[in-house]
Length: 322
Length: 207
Image 1 (cartoon, rainbow over the protein chains, first blue to last red):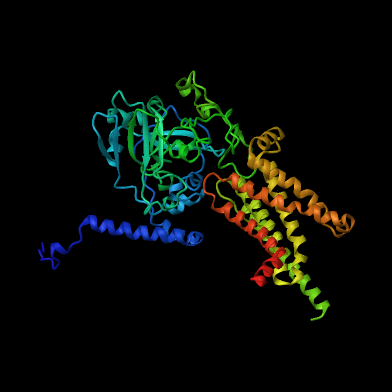
Image 2 (cartoon, chains in turn red, purple):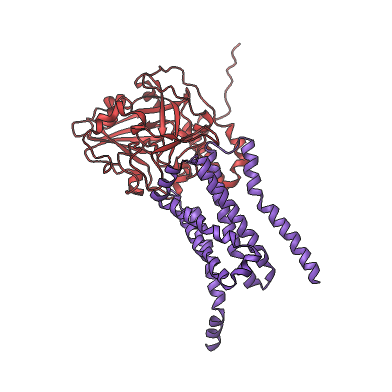
Protein backbone atom coordinates (compact mmCIF):
# COMPACT_ATOMS: atom_id res chain seq x y z
CA UNK A 1 0.00 0.00 0.00
CA UNK A 2 1.30 3.38 -0.91
CA UNK A 3 0.62 6.25 1.44
CA UNK A 4 0.88 9.61 -0.20
CA UNK A 5 0.82 11.91 2.73
CA UNK A 6 1.24 15.62 2.26
CA UNK A 7 4.36 16.87 3.97
CA UNK A 8 3.74 19.63 6.51
CA UNK A 9 7.05 21.32 5.65
CA UNK A 10 7.00 23.91 2.91
CA UNK A 11 9.66 23.34 0.24
CA UNK A 12 10.98 26.85 0.93
CA UNK A 13 11.64 25.93 4.54
CA UNK A 14 13.97 23.10 3.63
CA UNK A 15 17.56 24.14 4.06
CA UNK A 16 19.45 24.09 0.79
CA UNK A 17 22.13 21.39 0.73
CA UNK A 18 24.95 23.91 0.23
CA UNK A 19 23.78 26.08 3.09
CA UNK A 20 23.57 23.03 5.31
CA UNK A 21 27.08 21.87 4.36
CA UNK A 22 28.38 25.39 4.83
CA UNK A 23 26.98 25.48 8.34
CA UNK A 24 28.57 22.16 9.10
CA UNK A 25 31.90 23.44 7.86
CA UNK A 26 31.64 26.51 10.07
CA UNK A 27 30.70 24.45 13.09
CA UNK A 28 33.57 22.08 12.41
CA UNK A 29 35.97 24.96 11.92
CA UNK A 30 34.82 26.49 15.18
CA UNK A 31 35.53 23.17 16.81
CA UNK A 32 38.94 23.06 15.17
CA UNK A 33 39.88 26.49 16.46
CA UNK A 34 38.75 25.49 19.93
CA UNK A 35 41.07 22.53 19.68
CA UNK A 36 43.90 24.81 18.64
CA UNK A 37 43.23 27.26 21.43
CA UNK A 38 43.48 24.48 23.92
CA UNK A 39 46.57 23.02 22.28
CA UNK A 40 47.84 21.18 25.33
CA UNK A 41 44.45 19.67 26.05
CA UNK A 42 43.97 18.22 22.57
CA UNK A 43 45.43 14.98 23.80
CA UNK A 44 42.45 14.63 26.13
CA UNK A 45 39.73 15.13 23.52
CA UNK A 46 41.51 13.52 20.60
CA UNK A 47 39.86 10.17 21.19
CA UNK A 48 36.37 11.49 20.62
CA UNK A 49 37.34 13.45 17.52
CA UNK A 50 39.16 10.48 16.05
CA UNK A 51 35.90 8.60 15.69
CA UNK A 52 34.66 11.23 13.22
CA UNK A 53 37.36 10.58 10.66
CA UNK A 54 37.03 7.33 8.75
CA UNK A 55 39.64 5.45 6.76
CA UNK A 56 38.58 4.61 3.23
CA UNK A 57 39.99 1.81 1.08
CA UNK A 58 40.98 2.40 -2.53
CA UNK A 59 39.50 -0.42 -4.61
CA UNK A 60 41.80 -0.85 -7.56
CA UNK A 61 45.44 -0.04 -8.13
CA UNK A 62 48.29 -1.78 -9.91
CA UNK A 63 51.74 -2.62 -8.60
CA UNK A 64 54.66 -0.68 -10.03
CA UNK A 65 58.15 -1.62 -11.17
CA UNK A 66 59.40 1.59 -9.54
CA UNK A 67 58.61 0.32 -6.02
CA UNK A 68 61.37 -0.47 -3.55
CA UNK A 69 61.20 -3.70 -1.56
CA UNK A 70 62.56 -2.08 1.61
CA UNK A 71 60.69 -2.51 4.88
CA UNK A 72 57.70 -0.19 5.06
CA UNK A 73 57.55 2.50 7.73
CA UNK A 74 54.59 1.58 9.98
CA UNK A 75 51.27 3.25 9.10
CA UNK A 76 51.05 4.92 12.51
CA UNK A 77 54.45 6.58 12.07
CA UNK A 78 53.67 7.72 8.51
CA UNK A 79 50.45 9.33 9.73
CA UNK A 80 51.60 10.80 13.07
CA UNK A 81 55.04 12.25 12.28
CA UNK A 82 54.42 14.93 9.67
CA UNK A 83 55.83 18.24 8.54
CA UNK A 84 52.73 20.12 7.44
CA UNK A 85 52.97 23.66 8.79
CA UNK A 86 49.42 24.49 7.64
CA UNK A 87 48.37 22.42 10.66
CA UNK A 88 51.12 23.48 13.06
CA UNK A 89 54.90 23.33 13.33
CA UNK A 90 55.27 20.31 15.59
CA UNK A 91 55.46 16.84 14.02
CA UNK A 92 52.41 15.66 15.91
CA UNK A 93 50.26 18.74 15.16
CA UNK A 94 49.05 17.73 11.66
CA UNK A 95 47.48 14.43 12.72
CA UNK A 96 45.52 16.24 15.44
CA UNK A 97 44.73 19.58 13.81
CA UNK A 98 43.72 18.13 10.43
CA UNK A 99 40.94 15.91 11.77
CA UNK A 100 38.23 18.35 10.74
CA UNK A 101 39.77 19.19 7.37
CA UNK A 102 37.42 18.48 4.44
CA UNK A 103 39.20 17.18 1.32
CA UNK A 104 35.96 16.97 -0.70
CA UNK A 105 34.56 18.62 -2.73
CA UNK A 106 37.88 19.61 -4.29
CA UNK A 107 38.80 21.35 -7.51
CA UNK A 108 42.24 21.82 -9.02
CA UNK A 109 42.70 24.66 -11.46
CA UNK A 110 45.15 24.44 -14.33
CA UNK A 111 46.59 27.78 -15.38
CA UNK A 112 49.44 29.63 -17.05
CA UNK A 113 51.12 28.46 -20.23
CA UNK A 114 48.36 26.09 -21.30
CA UNK A 115 46.11 25.92 -24.35
CA UNK A 116 43.14 26.78 -22.18
CA UNK A 117 42.72 27.35 -18.44
CA UNK A 118 40.79 24.43 -16.96
CA UNK A 119 39.38 23.17 -13.72
CA UNK A 120 39.14 19.53 -12.73
CA UNK A 121 37.30 17.94 -9.81
CA UNK A 122 39.14 15.44 -7.63
CA UNK A 123 36.70 12.65 -8.63
CA UNK A 124 37.64 13.22 -12.29
CA UNK A 125 41.32 13.19 -11.40
CA UNK A 126 40.82 9.71 -9.89
CA UNK A 127 39.44 8.57 -13.27
CA UNK A 128 42.09 10.27 -15.39
CA UNK A 129 44.38 7.27 -15.47
CA UNK A 130 44.73 3.93 -13.60
CA UNK A 131 46.09 4.28 -10.07
CA UNK A 132 49.32 2.57 -9.06
CA UNK A 133 51.01 1.72 -5.81
CA UNK A 134 54.50 3.19 -5.62
CA UNK A 135 56.65 2.28 -2.64
CA UNK A 136 59.14 5.11 -2.38
CA UNK A 137 61.82 6.20 0.04
CA UNK A 138 61.11 9.65 1.42
CA UNK A 139 64.04 11.68 2.73
CA UNK A 140 63.32 14.80 4.79
CA UNK A 141 65.82 17.67 4.75
CA UNK A 142 65.91 17.34 8.56
CA UNK A 143 67.78 14.04 8.30
CA UNK A 144 65.07 11.40 8.72
CA UNK A 145 63.48 9.11 6.20
CA UNK A 146 60.56 6.74 5.65
CA UNK A 147 59.47 4.10 3.17
CA UNK A 148 55.90 4.86 2.13
CA UNK A 149 53.51 2.87 -0.08
CA UNK A 150 51.84 5.72 -1.97
CA UNK A 151 48.85 5.24 -4.24
CA UNK A 152 48.72 7.68 -7.14
CA UNK A 153 49.55 8.28 -10.77
CA UNK A 154 52.38 9.90 -12.71
CA UNK A 155 52.19 13.69 -12.79
CA UNK A 156 52.98 13.39 -16.51
CA UNK A 157 49.46 12.02 -17.09
CA UNK A 158 47.85 15.14 -15.64
CA UNK A 159 50.27 17.36 -17.56
CA UNK A 160 49.27 15.64 -20.81
CA UNK A 161 45.64 16.31 -19.97
CA UNK A 162 46.49 19.95 -19.11
CA UNK A 163 48.02 20.57 -22.56
CA UNK A 164 50.82 23.00 -21.74
CA UNK A 165 52.20 25.21 -24.52
CA UNK A 166 55.82 25.44 -25.66
CA UNK A 167 56.33 28.33 -23.20
CA UNK A 168 55.88 26.01 -20.22
CA UNK A 169 59.35 25.57 -18.72
CA UNK A 170 58.32 25.04 -15.10
CA UNK A 171 55.33 23.78 -13.16
CA UNK A 172 54.19 25.56 -10.02
CA UNK A 173 52.06 23.87 -7.37
CA UNK A 174 49.96 25.87 -4.95
CA UNK A 175 48.46 24.38 -1.80
CA UNK A 176 45.15 25.37 -0.26
CA UNK A 177 44.98 28.65 1.60
CA UNK A 178 42.24 28.45 4.23
CA UNK A 179 43.03 29.44 7.79
CA UNK A 180 39.60 28.24 8.90
CA UNK A 181 40.40 24.63 8.12
CA UNK A 182 44.18 25.01 8.38
CA UNK A 183 44.81 26.62 11.77
CA UNK A 184 48.58 26.69 11.26
CA UNK A 185 48.11 29.34 8.59
CA UNK A 186 47.07 31.83 11.28
CA UNK A 187 50.76 31.97 12.14
CA UNK A 188 53.08 33.55 9.61
CA UNK A 189 55.81 30.91 9.78
CA UNK A 190 55.72 30.70 5.98
CA UNK A 191 54.39 33.02 3.30
CA UNK A 192 51.04 31.30 2.67
CA UNK A 193 49.88 29.66 0.52
CA UNK A 194 52.57 27.00 0.24
CA UNK A 195 54.14 27.04 -3.22
CA UNK A 196 56.42 24.47 -4.77
CA UNK A 197 57.76 23.92 -8.25
CA UNK A 198 59.54 21.60 -10.66
CA UNK A 199 61.34 22.02 -13.93
CA UNK A 200 59.26 20.62 -16.79
CA UNK A 201 61.56 17.64 -17.39
CA UNK A 202 61.52 16.81 -13.66
CA UNK A 203 57.73 17.02 -13.69
CA UNK A 204 57.50 14.70 -16.70
CA UNK A 205 59.86 12.09 -15.20
CA UNK A 206 57.99 8.80 -14.69
CA UNK A 207 58.99 8.75 -10.99
CA UNK A 208 57.18 12.02 -10.22
CA UNK A 209 53.90 11.10 -8.63
CA UNK A 210 50.65 12.73 -7.67
CA UNK A 211 49.59 10.73 -4.63
CA UNK A 212 45.94 10.35 -3.65
CA UNK A 213 46.43 7.55 -1.15
CA UNK A 214 48.81 5.53 1.00
CA UNK A 215 48.74 2.02 2.43
CA UNK A 216 45.91 1.23 -0.03
CA UNK A 217 43.65 3.88 1.49
CA UNK A 218 42.56 7.41 0.62
CA UNK A 219 45.26 9.92 1.55
CA UNK A 220 44.88 10.93 5.22
CA UNK A 221 44.42 14.66 5.79
CA UNK A 222 47.75 14.99 7.60
CA UNK A 223 49.58 13.54 4.58
CA UNK A 224 48.15 16.07 2.11
CA UNK A 225 44.61 14.98 1.18
CA UNK A 226 43.13 14.87 -1.31
CA UNK A 227 46.18 15.10 -3.58
CA UNK A 228 49.86 15.82 -3.06
CA UNK A 229 53.09 15.77 -4.97
CA UNK A 230 55.72 13.07 -4.35
CA UNK A 231 59.19 13.56 -5.84
CA UNK A 232 61.21 10.73 -4.33
CA UNK A 233 64.70 11.97 -5.28
CA UNK A 234 64.13 15.37 -3.68
CA UNK A 235 63.80 16.41 -0.04
CA UNK A 236 60.32 15.95 1.34
CA UNK A 237 59.38 19.63 1.40
CA UNK A 238 59.18 19.60 -2.42
CA UNK A 239 56.04 17.49 -2.06
CA UNK A 240 53.32 20.16 -1.99
CA UNK A 241 50.19 18.94 -0.18
CA UNK A 242 46.48 19.67 -0.70
CA UNK A 243 47.15 21.04 -4.20
CA UNK A 244 44.53 23.45 -5.56
CA UNK A 245 46.44 25.03 -8.44
CA UNK A 246 48.90 23.81 -11.03
CA UNK A 247 50.38 26.64 -13.10
CA UNK A 248 52.79 26.33 -16.01
CA UNK A 249 55.37 29.11 -16.17
CA UNK A 250 58.24 30.33 -18.25
CA UNK A 251 60.32 31.42 -15.25
CA UNK A 252 61.42 29.50 -12.17
CA UNK A 253 58.67 29.60 -9.51
CA UNK A 254 59.55 31.19 -6.16
CA UNK A 255 58.81 28.46 -3.63
CA UNK A 256 57.66 28.99 -0.04
CA UNK A 257 60.87 27.61 1.45
CA UNK A 258 63.10 29.58 -0.92
CA UNK A 259 61.39 32.72 0.35
CA UNK A 260 61.75 31.59 3.97
CA UNK A 261 65.44 30.69 3.79
CA UNK A 262 67.18 31.30 0.45
CA UNK A 263 70.55 30.09 1.81
CA UNK A 264 69.06 26.90 3.21
CA UNK A 265 66.49 25.75 0.69
CA UNK A 266 67.13 25.79 -3.03
CA UNK A 267 64.74 25.26 -5.92
CA UNK A 268 66.19 21.87 -6.83
CA UNK A 269 66.50 20.41 -3.30
CA UNK A 270 67.79 17.11 -4.66
CA UNK A 271 68.79 14.64 -1.98
CA UNK A 272 72.57 14.96 -1.99
CA UNK A 273 74.80 13.51 0.75
CA UNK A 274 77.71 15.72 -0.34
CA UNK A 275 75.93 19.06 0.00
CA UNK A 276 75.41 19.84 3.67
CA UNK A 277 72.66 21.98 5.17
CA UNK A 278 73.66 24.63 7.74
CA UNK A 279 71.76 22.67 10.40
CA UNK A 280 71.54 19.05 9.39
CA UNK A 281 74.02 16.43 8.27
CA UNK A 282 72.95 15.17 4.87
CA UNK A 283 75.43 12.31 4.59
CA UNK A 284 73.35 10.03 6.80
CA UNK A 285 69.76 9.71 7.87
CA UNK A 286 67.56 8.15 10.50
CA UNK A 287 64.97 5.67 9.21
CA UNK A 288 61.76 6.20 11.14
CA UNK A 289 60.36 3.10 12.84
CA UNK A 290 63.72 1.67 13.88
CA UNK A 291 63.34 2.32 17.58
CA UNK A 292 65.71 3.78 20.14
CA UNK A 293 68.87 1.87 19.26
CA UNK A 294 68.86 1.66 15.48
CA UNK A 295 71.90 3.22 13.79
CA UNK A 296 71.72 5.88 11.10
CA UNK A 297 71.95 4.74 7.50
CA UNK A 298 73.95 6.31 4.67
CA UNK A 299 72.06 8.76 2.50
CA UNK A 300 72.27 7.93 -1.20
CA UNK A 301 72.73 10.36 -4.07
CA UNK A 302 69.30 11.37 -5.40
CA UNK A 303 67.92 9.26 -2.55
CA UNK A 304 68.87 6.12 -4.46
CA UNK A 305 67.09 7.16 -7.66
CA UNK A 306 70.23 8.32 -9.53
CA UNK A 307 69.71 5.75 -12.27
CA UNK A 308 66.31 7.19 -13.18
CA UNK A 309 66.97 10.91 -12.68
CA UNK A 310 70.75 11.49 -12.77
CA UNK A 311 70.67 12.47 -16.44
CA UNK A 312 68.32 15.38 -15.68
CA UNK A 313 71.20 17.21 -14.04
CA UNK A 314 74.16 16.28 -16.22
CA UNK A 315 76.55 19.20 -16.52
CA UNK A 316 74.86 21.11 -13.68
CA UNK A 317 76.77 22.34 -10.62
CA UNK A 318 74.77 20.66 -7.86
CA UNK A 319 76.54 22.59 -5.11
CA UNK A 320 75.43 25.88 -6.61
CA UNK A 321 72.02 24.53 -7.65
CA UNK A 322 71.21 22.96 -4.28
CA UNK B 1 61.46 29.77 64.62
CA UNK B 2 64.61 28.17 65.82
CA UNK B 3 67.61 27.70 63.56
CA UNK B 4 67.33 23.97 64.03
CA UNK B 5 63.73 23.99 62.82
CA UNK B 6 64.60 26.02 59.73
CA UNK B 7 67.52 23.72 59.00
CA UNK B 8 65.38 20.60 59.05
CA UNK B 9 62.67 22.35 57.01
CA UNK B 10 65.19 23.23 54.32
CA UNK B 11 66.39 19.64 54.37
CA UNK B 12 62.88 18.38 53.68
CA UNK B 13 62.34 20.90 50.90
CA UNK B 14 65.67 19.88 49.40
CA UNK B 15 64.57 16.26 49.40
CA UNK B 16 61.30 17.24 47.73
CA UNK B 17 63.09 19.33 45.08
CA UNK B 18 65.47 16.43 44.49
CA UNK B 19 62.60 14.00 43.87
CA UNK B 20 60.69 16.47 41.68
CA UNK B 21 63.82 17.04 39.60
CA UNK B 22 63.95 13.34 38.77
CA UNK B 23 60.44 13.29 37.28
CA UNK B 24 61.60 14.15 33.71
CA UNK B 25 64.00 11.20 33.83
CA UNK B 26 61.41 8.75 35.14
CA UNK B 27 58.90 10.02 32.59
CA UNK B 28 61.33 9.16 29.77
CA UNK B 29 61.99 5.73 31.24
CA UNK B 30 58.25 5.11 31.61
CA UNK B 31 57.49 6.25 28.04
CA UNK B 32 60.42 4.20 26.75
CA UNK B 33 59.20 0.99 28.34
CA UNK B 34 55.67 1.61 27.09
CA UNK B 35 56.82 2.26 23.53
CA UNK B 36 55.34 5.76 23.78
CA UNK B 37 58.24 7.92 22.62
CA UNK B 38 56.59 8.54 19.24
CA UNK B 39 57.72 7.89 15.68
CA UNK B 40 61.22 9.27 16.28
CA UNK B 41 62.13 8.17 19.82
CA UNK B 42 65.77 9.30 19.56
CA UNK B 43 64.74 12.82 18.63
CA UNK B 44 62.22 12.72 21.48
CA UNK B 45 64.89 11.81 24.05
CA UNK B 46 67.34 14.39 22.67
CA UNK B 47 64.71 17.13 22.73
CA UNK B 48 63.37 16.22 26.14
CA UNK B 49 66.74 16.02 27.92
CA UNK B 50 67.89 19.21 26.18
CA UNK B 51 64.76 21.08 27.18
CA UNK B 52 65.10 19.97 30.81
CA UNK B 53 68.75 20.98 30.93
CA UNK B 54 67.65 24.42 29.75
CA UNK B 55 64.83 24.56 32.31
CA UNK B 56 67.24 23.71 35.13
CA UNK B 57 69.65 26.33 33.84
CA UNK B 58 66.89 28.94 34.13
CA UNK B 59 65.92 27.66 37.61
CA UNK B 60 69.56 27.85 38.73
CA UNK B 61 69.85 31.40 37.45
CA UNK B 62 66.59 32.32 39.22
CA UNK B 63 67.85 31.62 42.72
CA UNK B 64 69.97 34.76 43.04
CA UNK B 65 67.30 37.23 41.88
CA UNK B 66 64.68 35.51 44.02
CA UNK B 67 66.99 35.75 47.04
CA UNK B 68 67.78 39.38 46.29
CA UNK B 69 64.23 40.54 45.75
CA UNK B 70 62.56 38.43 48.44
CA UNK B 71 65.27 38.92 51.02
CA UNK B 72 65.02 35.22 51.91
CA UNK B 73 68.61 34.02 51.80
CA UNK B 74 67.73 30.32 52.03
CA UNK B 75 66.99 30.22 48.30
CA UNK B 76 70.69 30.24 47.58
CA UNK B 77 70.95 26.83 49.22
CA UNK B 78 69.06 25.27 46.29
CA UNK B 79 71.30 26.74 43.62
CA UNK B 80 73.92 24.02 43.65
CA UNK B 81 71.41 21.16 43.47
CA UNK B 82 69.54 22.76 40.59
CA UNK B 83 72.83 23.49 38.84
CA UNK B 84 73.89 19.88 39.20
CA UNK B 85 70.55 18.70 37.83
CA UNK B 86 71.17 20.96 34.84
CA UNK B 87 74.50 19.19 34.41
CA UNK B 88 72.79 15.81 34.84
CA UNK B 89 70.24 16.48 32.08
CA UNK B 90 72.93 18.04 29.87
CA UNK B 91 74.93 14.80 30.30
CA UNK B 92 71.89 12.70 29.31
CA UNK B 93 71.38 15.09 26.38
CA UNK B 94 74.92 14.67 25.11
CA UNK B 95 74.92 10.90 25.74
CA UNK B 96 71.75 10.55 23.69
CA UNK B 97 73.42 12.61 20.96
CA UNK B 98 76.70 10.66 20.98
CA UNK B 99 75.24 7.22 21.53
CA UNK B 100 71.63 6.99 20.32
CA UNK B 101 71.88 9.53 17.50
CA UNK B 102 75.42 8.88 16.25
CA UNK B 103 76.35 5.42 17.65
CA UNK B 104 79.69 6.91 18.83
CA UNK B 105 80.79 7.36 15.21
CA UNK B 106 83.49 9.87 16.18
CA UNK B 107 84.35 10.83 12.63
CA UNK B 108 80.75 11.79 11.87
CA UNK B 109 80.32 13.47 15.23
CA UNK B 110 83.41 15.62 14.72
CA UNK B 111 82.14 16.69 11.28
CA UNK B 112 78.70 17.41 12.70
CA UNK B 113 80.16 19.60 15.45
CA UNK B 114 82.43 21.73 13.29
CA UNK B 115 80.04 22.07 10.36
CA UNK B 116 76.86 23.04 12.17
CA UNK B 117 76.85 26.19 14.32
CA UNK B 118 74.04 25.02 16.59
CA UNK B 119 75.90 21.81 17.44
CA UNK B 120 79.14 23.73 17.97
CA UNK B 121 77.65 26.18 20.47
CA UNK B 122 75.76 23.39 22.24
CA UNK B 123 78.87 21.27 22.53
CA UNK B 124 80.92 24.24 23.78
CA UNK B 125 78.30 24.99 26.40
CA UNK B 126 78.52 21.40 27.61
CA UNK B 127 82.34 21.47 27.84
CA UNK B 128 82.17 24.70 29.85
CA UNK B 129 79.76 23.05 32.28
CA UNK B 130 82.28 20.38 33.25
CA UNK B 131 84.64 22.59 35.32
CA UNK B 132 81.64 24.13 37.05
CA UNK B 133 80.31 20.71 38.03
CA UNK B 134 83.73 19.59 39.26
CA UNK B 135 84.21 22.70 41.40
CA UNK B 136 80.70 22.60 42.84
CA UNK B 137 81.70 21.01 46.16
CA UNK B 138 82.16 23.00 49.38
CA UNK B 139 85.80 21.90 49.55
CA UNK B 140 86.46 23.24 46.07
CA UNK B 141 84.71 26.50 46.92
CA UNK B 142 87.04 26.94 49.88
CA UNK B 143 90.12 25.99 47.91
CA UNK B 144 89.42 28.36 45.04
CA UNK B 145 88.33 31.24 47.26
CA UNK B 146 87.69 34.38 45.22
CA UNK B 147 88.50 32.64 41.97
CA UNK B 148 85.50 30.34 42.46
CA UNK B 149 83.06 33.16 41.91
CA UNK B 150 84.96 34.30 38.85
CA UNK B 151 84.98 30.77 37.38
CA UNK B 152 81.30 30.28 38.02
CA UNK B 153 80.45 33.44 36.11
CA UNK B 154 80.93 31.14 33.11
CA UNK B 155 77.31 30.17 33.67
CA UNK B 156 76.20 33.40 31.93
CA UNK B 157 78.19 32.47 28.83
CA UNK B 158 76.82 28.92 29.04
CA UNK B 159 73.29 30.32 29.25
CA UNK B 160 73.88 32.47 26.19
CA UNK B 161 75.29 29.52 24.23
CA UNK B 162 72.45 27.24 25.32
CA UNK B 163 69.83 29.75 24.19
CA UNK B 164 71.65 30.20 20.85
CA UNK B 165 71.87 26.41 20.50
CA UNK B 166 68.07 26.16 20.68
CA UNK B 167 67.50 29.23 18.50
CA UNK B 168 69.74 27.98 15.69
CA UNK B 169 68.40 24.44 15.84
CA UNK B 170 64.84 25.44 15.07
CA UNK B 171 63.79 25.39 11.42
CA UNK B 172 61.21 28.16 11.32
CA UNK B 173 58.95 28.49 14.34
CA UNK B 174 61.11 30.42 16.82
CA UNK B 175 58.43 30.77 19.51
CA UNK B 176 59.80 28.24 21.98
CA UNK B 177 63.50 29.23 21.83
CA UNK B 178 62.49 32.89 22.10
CA UNK B 179 60.60 32.15 25.30
CA UNK B 180 63.78 30.75 26.84
CA UNK B 181 65.86 33.62 25.44
CA UNK B 182 63.56 36.19 27.03
CA UNK B 183 63.55 34.38 30.38
CA UNK B 184 67.36 34.26 30.26
CA UNK B 185 67.73 37.96 29.50
CA UNK B 186 65.11 38.89 32.11
CA UNK B 187 67.09 37.00 34.75
CA UNK B 188 70.23 38.89 33.73
CA UNK B 189 68.34 42.19 33.72
CA UNK B 190 67.00 41.56 37.25
CA UNK B 191 70.59 41.28 38.49
CA UNK B 192 71.58 44.58 36.94
CA UNK B 193 68.53 46.36 38.24
CA UNK B 194 69.25 45.00 41.73
CA UNK B 195 72.88 45.99 41.56
CA UNK B 196 72.12 49.55 40.52
CA UNK B 197 68.88 49.89 42.49
CA UNK B 198 70.46 52.44 44.80
CA UNK B 199 71.27 54.60 41.79
CA UNK B 200 67.67 54.34 40.65
CA UNK B 201 66.44 55.32 44.12
CA UNK B 202 68.90 58.18 44.38
CA UNK B 203 67.77 59.60 41.08
CA UNK B 204 64.20 59.44 42.35
CA UNK B 205 65.12 61.27 45.55
CA UNK B 206 67.00 63.99 43.73
CA UNK B 207 63.97 64.72 41.63
